Image (cartoon, rainbow, N blue to C red; front, top):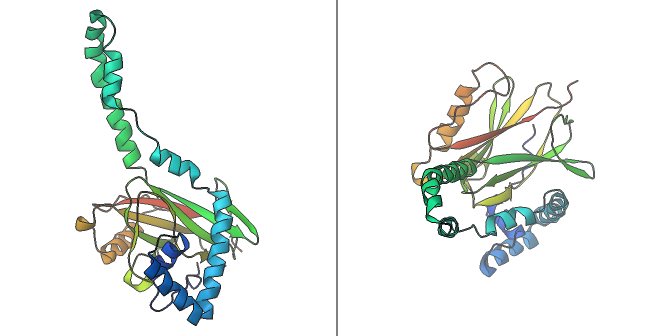
Length: 256
């Protein structure tokens, strides 16, 4: 996998560019990016390319449904209890037996959702953009981007893993442009990766840390994945590093 397709511009962090493209910067920060783009033709060209990519990917993964899920008001538990308490007294006995189970199921669902870190791979092949689905085989030259969805957000790391055990930090590390942080919701990570013709299978690993105070260091995250690759099978079955959650996406590709 080629990481040269992730450009870095001195004085303009990748995350700042991503926020600029999402219209999340203050006027002063936006002016800083625009002045840098005016002085750097390469940065100006990169911003034009990123706008075109975002428009293409937005057709495949519109944010509207996710926004509706995040902003939809949740029914009040007390309203549910009041509605159930209206019938005659006899039903109160039934309610006393059933209500704990209703609440426990609600808590189970909440835990399931809170642990629901999701990573998707979006592929650009020529002028066609599609989401990698089951059975999809990628090709050398395909450009991929990673979309992460989570209800909590936090510090984020992205690493590439080869079937021969090679681990390559891609995002969120000091050597790759510094830390990344996402808010709750859905986020397409900045930059894209180009699949090369190397005769090996690869996978992407997303690691999310919700509690910044107890977050493992970037070095610990990389060391954890390197140690996990010693297990048989690819991609390996990973046990989460304490304080983190992770998602693994294999990138099956045509081999020569």
